[in-house]
Image 1 (tube, rainbow, N blue to C red):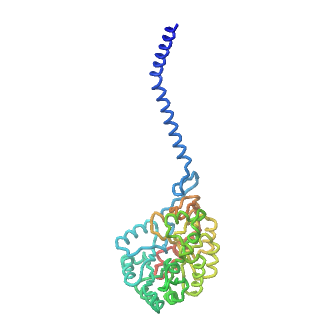
Image 2: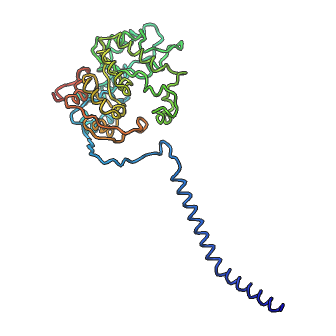
Length: 390
């Protein structure tokens, strides 16, 4: 009996071994494959469910609608707002090539400097192409703290005009960062500068003035700020109250400046930073007949409100000028598309300015001509009007 049991046990062990030897590799491989597949599925699920950052999120629109991608302006135009510091002849030649390709007839360089720098810039840009460029002078503040600064600055400006300047550009540091030696801020309506603005009226040259920044730059930098991305990429653009005057303080000073010099023609840069409130900009025009504006670098503001933008441009067609700011030939087509078409829901060229899509707000040809060149011809001395349509 005992021998039978031992025999049965031995047979069972042998059979188990055989099964183990033949079945285990297959089972192990099957389990390994299943584990790998499960891990892959978990990784894919994790990637699908991870929340993207605002910079990573780039949704592609599925909207199907007519598109009109315009590469060249319908009419020749004047760009009232561009910057070219100390240009070389080679740079000027490149500019002409790009300008011709998009119907840009006259480019205004707002960064001409003053004194010898201004004279050289005028010679370089207008020497070979006298009808294609306009150069604005800038103020030097080197002697700001010496008594009589305003009168000297006005005299320098008069000499700059003799040397070819056709306007005055006031940069953004004026009112925000420029200070006297004692640490006090130079206000936008500081009476020390009155002789300069009065000289502009006397010389019949416009003042293109940049006061403040977008109002959102003065607001808390939190997740409700619609310019959060730009402030993340360029933290230095924030205007915290500990270091800068409030936005409304700068607006009040600017408006008092406009009121003090009614015979001086001002061009408030960048829709006067009221592109997000066109009704307010309209009231500014109503209060100050000597004030105009440009659309440089604020196309996204108009493009997100096409109905209001269209009506505003029609109503104030004599007060708005074409401008781009950063000179990139391939970016002008967004301006053409907005001003000349009714295209819908298309991407803006610089996401940090606008996380939203924009729309065309096509304006009538007569309005378009005024924005493109007629208003600039009225304000700028020395441009040949014969180069433009009636």
